[in-house]
Image (tube, rainbow, N blue to C red; front, side, top):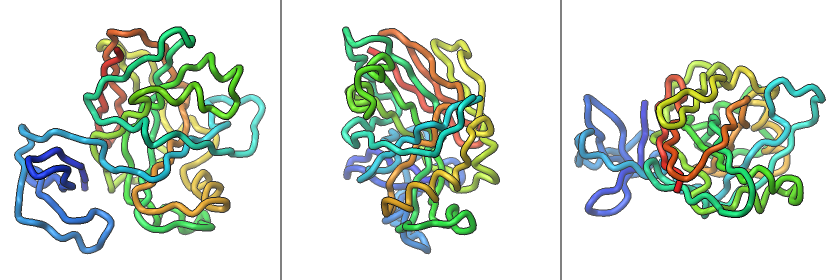
Length: 245
């Protein structure tokens, strides 16, 4: 099932894709889902970030082919950087190279604390695409990931949440710049699984519905310039498109 958050005349509205249209629902985090009876045709859908998280976390040390494995660590990224599909990403000027990073994002579905490997995925609503935009050179002077991650619209998210992923550790992740594939990888190249990341995070912090965990860039960091169009494509989920300005 795909759950989106749409811009409508009445304001932001969650909706579920059914039969080529988006049927509006009251709350994606309450089961069973309650439908309002309103519908947005797919051709008219304007997608917002699928959730408005209170917390966005990135996972450190989750790099492809890490030759010096380290314990999982997490870091906060400002929720003010969250952007919708199609929003323009404002590359911070004079602050070094700007990288896009295609990643698998976990959307929490219910309150989660001290999760285990056995129940971690039961607390997940679904998965979406995220572009963890970064001024990568700032990492040398700011190990807390604040300066390099705080730009305007530096966390595009979407276009929707996919709730039915057979194995989140086997999701392909491709990054295209101006229509040319620049990175091909997947969550299968991350040294830590989705469940392991959630177990670690919730051993320290309780996550709530709508919170987002970015699981790391498995060799999917690509340098970009103003004027570039970036597509982050996740197998079984969708394509997240944003322009760099």
